Image 1 (cartoon, rainbow over the protein chains, first blue to last red):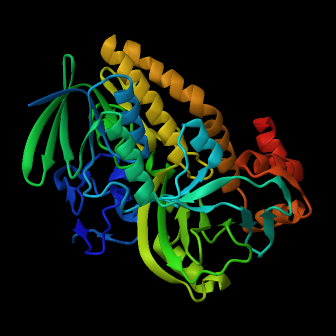
Image 2: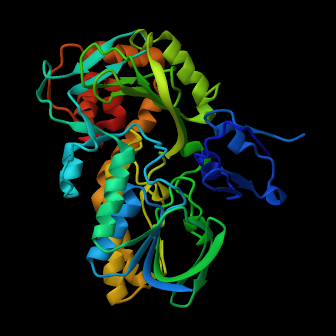
Image 3: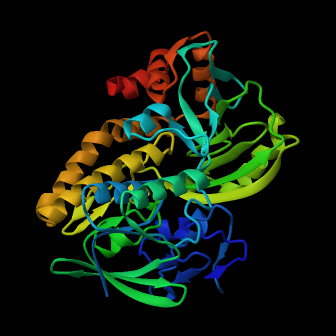
Amino acid sequence: MIVKDWCSFCGECAGVCPRNLIQVREYSLVFNEDDCKDCDTCIKACPINALEKED
Amino acid sequence: MIETDVIVVGSGPAGSSAAKHAALGGAKVILMDKKSEIGAPKRCAEGVSIQGLEKLGIEPSPRWVTQEIQGVRIQTPDGTDVWLTKDEVKLPEAGYILERKVFDKHMAMDAARAGAEIRIKTLVTGIEKIDDGYMVFTESMGKEEVFKCKILIAADGPEGHIARWAGLRPAAKPKEMESGVQYEMCNVEFERPGVIEFYLGSCAPGGYVWIFPKGDDIANVGLAILPHKAEKTAIEYLDDFVATCPYLKNAQAVELNVGGDPVGGMTKKLYDDNILVCGDAAGQVNPLTGGGIISGMTGGMCAGQVAAQAIKEDCSKKFLKQYDEMAHEELDHEIKRYKKVQEYLLTLSDEELDSIAHAFQGESFDKISTTEIVKKLIKVSPKALLKLGKFV
């Protein structure tokens, strides 16, 4: 997952992740990419378009 | 390893309230927050009811009250206004707009003064269930530490991991998590001062736009949407609103706030052996307004009180069930009823909202409250009566 530099670390993505794979630290996001099933729920939920899927 | 009776994770209003009441009940409490500053950045429009604060025994302080609410304005898509101010309402006393940065710190200080230890900049990286409690693994500025507690209280917000790590279900399904964004702005113009404004309809699918005044020409201007009902992201809806709203033509943003709001109602299971969940993490939010300060703090108070008693008696789920009963007793009335109203409002088109607003014209109100507005809605709209007849 690409986290854009305007991410505010609000945690919306972590809250909606159906598999609980996103950890929000104070100023960073940690994704457990291995278990991610590309459901894109986090990308759609981000209020400020700060997440993008890696090709 | 550091041993204590109770660990509270998250020092928002719910967590601080839990820590305070657990400490007041005689428990040894550690309150942890991952942030360097409690209360900032806010993820909130900052409105609370006066009655709610009174019930929690919190004396309003000029340090954190920015504006006493003078009324409510609700606008529907065709520009029809429903005003509830002193001209229309007998008892306009309603609530305050807070300065959350100051309020949250004040609540944490209350917990500290009651005896809780506070650890800021401390992230919980994992938990482990043991026979008589939980091990809690933390990281603080590169330093890893291990704690052991008899009761773990998860007040770690809508993104919280603690409850899910413990095998409890999250507060909201993705479809029930609102996506919110807000600017704090100055140079805002108000038609009537001190009035909280709500804009309904397709300007914010699944939610609404708010303008909450914070004294002088300052206001929180924000919105929340349900992403599955929306075509754009929250910030795009907000920028569109700001660009077209006449009251904001000179407004300048000095702060951007972002965050999720769980509006799906309270979680099925709020407790298990040695663990309690409260606040946004437990879905203790009014699903209609999205407001969660008072309800979260009420949940926190119940959790703290039960935790303190459990330390003296029994930390198993059999005893902790009391928290579930207390929280439902205190909050169900509000959360369950407003969930129905929220679901009903989601079914309305812009035209239906307009026709309801037209029917509201000339109505007078006894007081300003969400209940009062919903009662009036049922009176003026046959469809609302059909769907919400049991509300009153």
